[in-house]
Amino acid sequence: MDYKLYATQLLDYNPSSVSSDDMSFMVKVINSGSTPKIRSYFRFRSQSADSYEQSAAHRLLELGLIQIIEGKFLSGSTNYALTEIGIFCALSKLEEYPPALLIKYSNNSVLETLVYQFLEVQTVKRCTASLYTEITRYLKECTARTMSSLGGIKNSRSEEQKNERIKELELDLMWSARMLVLKVAMMYSEANILRSTSGMTKDNAKVAVYELENDTKSLLAKDNKFKTFLNLTYEELVDGYDEIRNRSENG
Image (cartoon, rainbow, N blue to C red; front, side, top):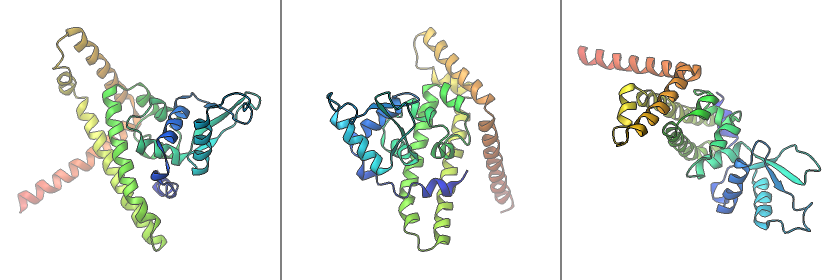
């Protein structure tokens, strides 16, 4: 993954410039299907177009958080999509992510860097709420780490210093990704799947939850990206464990 591209395309992002109305409009764009359509003020000014939507759209276009995409000229609507900065803004500001955000923009460089280098799209699309919650927590951590690094990257005194700071961010984000895949692997052990249903009193509810989580476990077992990343993480864990054990035995 190109972490330099990931970081540099976010340098102009200013979270304080985005209002709650702006975020409401962005959620509408996220949830509006594969070709988001918002009624055009210029084509429908004879009708009572929603002024907040128009001002939010204009503002978000100026901030570079959304962009106009190709659509039918005579459809009476303007088609919008989030930009890279817009996706990062949504990931950092929304308390809960609409599932469409991670699926619709799976080919975007932000999500490719943070999620889809170690998970297939189908795994995220079909996962249970428990796995989706862990992915959400991980993304919140990634955006917080990124935000704390952007100022230093932007104010770097030289290209060398800038690259060093981007590399530090990359290591932090990769560490978070390793922790996530290890946690997910542990979550989907047979013992932990059974433990997750232990507080339920109804047998049919236990069976339903078990089957859902077991289906997600099967998805992960077929996910080549996840398996590759998990193997690499496990190898690093074993190497670290062996080095510490050997140092302890020889010390």
